[in-house]
Length: 152
Image (cartoon, rainbow, N blue to C red; front, side, top):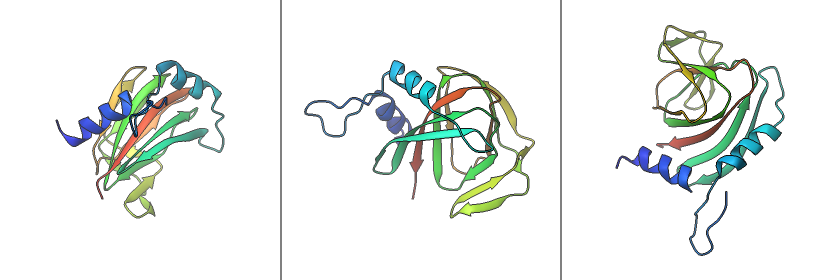
């Protein structure tokens, strides 16, 4: 099984801890929905995020949006999203307009020129490999479970 699929299934199946199983975590669907509902967004992008843990070369978090996000591109990070609530348009591919580096390996911009548009909704799982520009257009309440796998 490819490492990214293994990481995804480990994180999705793994925040209850197992009695004697080191590192085991379980995030129940009801917990994720409740967490998303209680998150308060802020700032001009109306976003909120909560880290659920760091496990070696990957991290797990819960994110919420109530407005469109900017475009981004990770040189060495794979993103997995699992939609919990709401619906959004995910743009992948294309070219980031007015790109700028926000930190090493992280490129951001206001939008994407070109690219494919995909509607994503609860239960959908998305895999975005390193080097692929992406942007979430989420005009309403949208929550998603995020796994970031760092290949560095």
